[in-house]
Length: 447
Image (cartoon, rainbow, N blue to C red):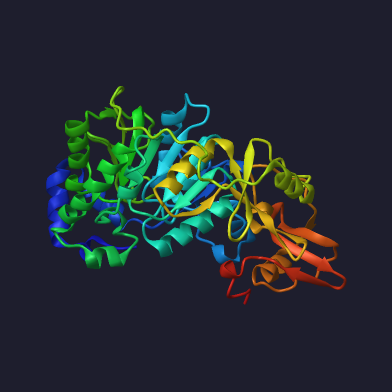
């Protein structure tokens, strides 16, 4: 927690000028205690203590040690700032009339808003999540893998590269890099790095990202813009620019009793007031009939597995439903790709956009033996009837540390904890080979 005495003086003066009637209440929010919130996975159930606007969101009374909770490692829930979880309702609103929505998250790492979108999509359509910074893109890929919905694409490229795709998406989320003022009470680094000119510098970068996003929207589609700052240059001014330049229509926020500041262009959560941090957001719609060079893509260029090869893979996994999927053999695994994802992947291949992950991995054949993929073990979109063994808490922590949990079984078996699937074991005689991903290893056990 920070206090107003630590906040930059120039920032305080601007906030007082920007919100004169609410200045004292905003300061009180900055001085309030921090809270911890989580978002439950759509496939693992809602919570009884929901956040307004998100039936899967929950504010915790205290912060546990998430690293020692097997459910967190299994993707049963995700630790996510409370204010941003309200965007669930706006995603639902934008895609309500679509059977197979195409949704994109342009600035996606570490992945919280992508997971919110996947929850709102309820297994329908495709989510394309992009992060330009490769190290952050790997974190994004991990979080989406653990969420286990199986209908996502992860890429790492610039938004300029994505703009070359032409109008494609029904909804694009842009949680733009910003000056971070809404995170001041949580993040001392954001305070240390802030300077009066920072909002304007951030706004310049945001403009190109937003222009590229508009270029990727089909006519009549939606743009959900958000920042974790309170600066007008990065918030209302950006919306006004899009309205003026592209004719974007601002969608009024229905009275959701969220406790936000209703602005002429969007709405604003202030730190502490809703037990979350600062967040600006605005839902906009692109005008109908504003065609911007839609690419008509076929499956051309994607080396899909033959029907015969697909049947051979299916023979290894008779419990897995691959209807509506094509199979693609990557350098590491055979992956199952939803058929309606193929045109997007074809465009990406033609434009040489680097795809880190698509669909879900099934496994790989090595030296005549089938090795199932970790993504298959934690896939939540379908509960395939695969062999399981239940671990107690100490065994689960042992498993997550890549050690042998000492359980009885035979052959390939999924280790579970209280119903959450953790990953594969191969039970051989009196030992278990642990196939949990090495890069996700829990480094420190229970003390």
